Length: 338
Length: 264
Image (tube, rainbow over all chains, first blue to last red; front, side, top):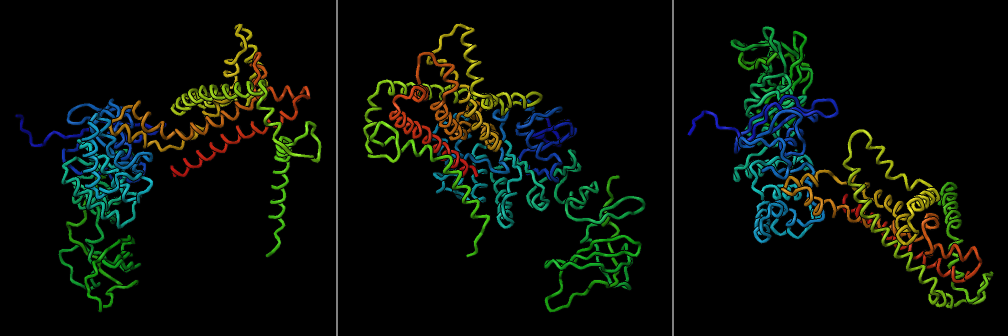
C-alpha cells in the first residue's frame, strides 16, 4: 500500500471553467474535497458557488477542466450516471407522487425491487420524523416538512456525495437553526460527504469542516471555520465572514475583528498594547453585546464590539461622545494578501 | 350607498355586450323547441318534434358521425404533433429558435381560406382524392397549434428542477419524460385536446376546401341554410353543436384552472 500523508480526495475539480453568455461564471477552479467532509461553498449570489455545485451534479457541463469522483472522471457523464444526489433549493418534490413514491423514486430508477424500495423509503421517511406521512402529497406539507422529505429522498440512495443547494433558505430563522443541527448530526451519522452551498456565513461556520469562500467565480480561501475567521487571507474573506476593520500597519492591510478591540478610559495604562485614541460616534445595543462605532484620532473609523458582562443594575459605561482609548494586542491584526 | 357612475356604466356595457353576443344564439335555441316549421315570432307552441325528426334524418346523423370522427382523429394527430413540437421548441436554443417558435404558431394566424386553398391545390397537385383523411389533415393544421400552445405554456412554467431532480435520482431521459414530464403536461395536453376537438367540430372554411363528397355537420348546416331547407332541423343541429363545443371548452378551462392550483 502506498502511504501518503494526505489521503486522495473523494472529489477533485481541476481547472474548471464555465462561461454563461460571454461571462465566466467560474474560472480555473481547483478544489479537493475529502471523504466524510462537511464542505461548504460560501459566497454572495453570482459568485459561482451554485454553478460549481451544478457541475458536480452534472446539470451543467464545464467548458474546460475535469470533475473526478474517487479518481474517476465524471465530467461528461449525465446526472443519472453519477453517484451523487442533490437537495434542491426549491426541494423539487414531485407534486403528483406521494411522499413514499417521491422517496422511493431513486431506488426504483436503480432497479431495486419494489418491496425493498418501499421498506427503505419508509425507513428514510421515519428517520426524518415523517413516518406517518407516506401517503400524502408534497402540496399538503409545510416548508420544513418538505425540506425533510427532500433530504430523505436524497439520503435513501446512500450516495457517495450529497449536494445541498441552499436547502434551508426558505425556512424561518428558528427552523433553520434547528435544521442546521439536524443536518450536521445526519452527516455525522451517515458519514456521507456533504457539499453545502450557502450565502449565510453563520450557517457555514456552524456546520462545516471546511469552507471555500467564492467571489467572482474564484475561490478566495479554503479553510476551517476557525482559520477562515481568525486568519482571513483576503479583504473579501475578512469582510464576508463576520465583520471586520481593515487597518494599515507598516504599509500592509490587516484585518482587525471588532471583538478584539478593547475600549479603555483615555488615561488608562496600556503598555504592551497597540492603542488609538477615539471618541464614540454611535452605540448599538444588541443584547448579548454592544457595538460601538469609533471616530479615531487619525481620522479613520473602527467598529468595536464588547460583551455585556456587567450585571443588569449597572448603567452602561460608554455613551455616544465618550472619549476612549481603543486598544488591541499586537498579534490581533491579521495581515491580508495584497 | 353612493351612486357610482363609472361602475354602473361598466356593468351596463358588460350586459349590452353579453346580449349582443348571446341573443342570436339564444333565439336559435328557442326556435329549436318551436312546434311550427316556419320561424315566426312570437312562437305559437312548443314541442320536441324537431329533435325527433332531426335525429331520424339519415343525412344529419351521417354528418354528425363524420364530424365526430374527423374531430377525434384530427385531435389525436394534433396531440401527438403538438406535444412533439412543444418539446422540441422548448429545448431549441440559439439562432433561429425564435423564428421556428413563431413558424409553429403561424397556421392559427393564417386565414382559414388560405390554409384551405393551399391544401386543396397541394392535394390536387399530387393527385390525392379529397376524402375523410384530407379533412383530417386540414383540421390537423390548426388543432396542432392549439395543443402546442397549451403544452409549451405549461412547459415554460414547470420548474426545471423537477426534471433535474429525476435525473439526479438516477432516471434516464426517457424515464424522466414518462414519469415526471408527461404527467406534469397531462392536464395541459388534455385541455389542448378538448379545445382542438371543439375547433375541429365546428370548422367550415378549411373543410370546404378539403372535403370531397363528405358532409360534416357544419357543412350540412351551411348547405341547408343556403338552400333555405330544413331550417327547423338546422336549429336543432345548432343546439347540439353548441353543446358539443361548449362542453369541451368548459372542461378544458377547468383542467387548466385545477393545474394552476396544483402547481402554485
